[in-house]
Image 1 (cartoon, rainbow, N blue to C red):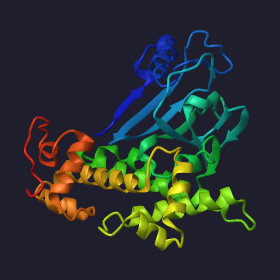
Image 2: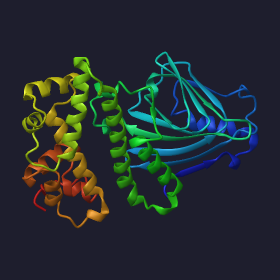
Image 3: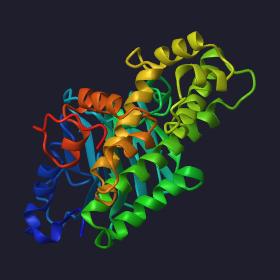
Image 4: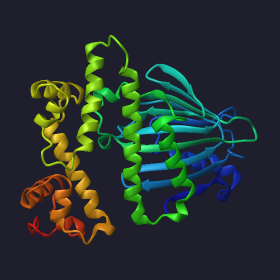
Length: 340
């Protein structure tokens, strides 16, 4: 079975809460955590059942636990992930950037823990535990511009319909069928989850900007969502360039660059985004054992590289090894292998 499983029943009753608290300490740096309504007196009877599965860079989990309260007591360390919390049973109470809210089954709370002030996991009653699914996504894996994405962070998004329901359904299936999958499946499943995360977030951004008489900034956000979707769909096209992207959206290249810089905090150009995404997709293919017999130059061509040598140079610059060395797990190999 893929994944790591933990059950509080495997720990003496008086030590259950302390044991779970220790497991959470790294994830919730800077927070005090207590059992809701008990003050954390002795931990007897505390319930925690967890299954966590790493899918490449993405992590999905099912967590059942007694009611707990988490409150920030000091500035925590930085984190490079966004997180979806998907209540299945009970309610999630949040205080994020001074805004309070409640997420219940059918919702999906999307947040960045660095800006979370308090989190309450409330069981529906004394007989049943709180149950949530979690999806942890590396920030640099989400291809939507950060400036646009900030409009959704800290929000309760719909999870019972549209792309949100698809995302929830896939995550539930993976967690319920962990024994079916092999370790080599995890990266492919991670890619599928990432695609659904992008679809859900892009759908939400478009829904919030699909209104008449939008302000110019909102129109720019809507355009950027369409631009990013277009580039994702055309990564394999060698002719994908900033000019072709601008032409497809009836804007000038200079305007495209201007709004892209504005909503990515100047961290990346359009061409740089295309290059990074192509290399990342190629890297995943090189790591896939099912594609082990596919020559490197064909994988390069699959992601828009018409010259194998140029692909090798770009790959080595990005990852510090040649494509062949990466495929065979030999980071010391100096061979320039673009034509292999």
